[in-house]
Amino acid sequence: MPEIGLHNLRPSPGSTKTRKRVGRGMGSGSGKTSGRGQKGQKSRSGSHNMRAGFEGGQMPLYMRMGKLRGPQMKKSMPMGPFRTSNEIVNIADLAERFPAGADVTPATLISAGLLKNLREAVKVLGNGEITHALNVTVNGISASAKAKIEAAGGTVTILDFKVRESGE
Image 1 (cartoon, one colour):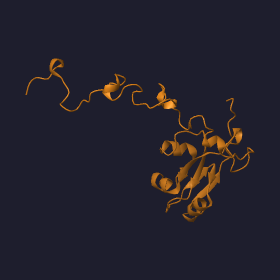
Image 2 (cartoon, rainbow, N blue to C red):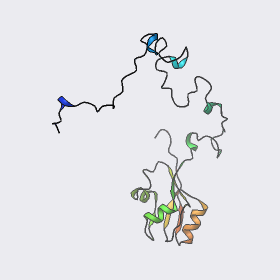
Image 3 (tube, rainbow, N blue to C red):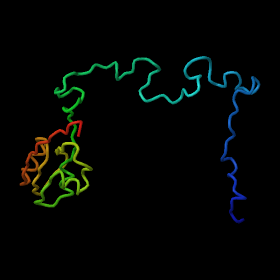
Image 4 (cartoon, rainbow, N blue to C red):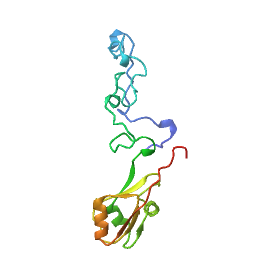
């Protein structure tokens, strides 16, 4: 096998494809409009990178849909300080990462690798099973999760989550 160097590098046969030369006369098969058809948006340059949701100038779907107003409505768009998003943790994750009798707080959830930060409220959901007692202190918990933790001999404490102001 010959020595490999910059002087003898070349692509393997068939791995490169020759570029299609458009706009080189009618005899080439890609003359005049260069395969872009007649007039219109997609015949222009820079036309093939529209933003997501763009519908050619038509009113987009997300603007056509009705919006539920009122910042404190449960089903409305999350607006301002009434934004209601939670970091979700399941019972199965707690049972897997914490030994019996451990205190589960937002800070210990971060050290266990279940959360990245404390910007959002933490809510425990009841997906999975738990067999040992844990002392859970979080911002919210579902009824099924609370029942499972208390059935295993653990305790549940609800923390108050203060929403940070936008200026902070």
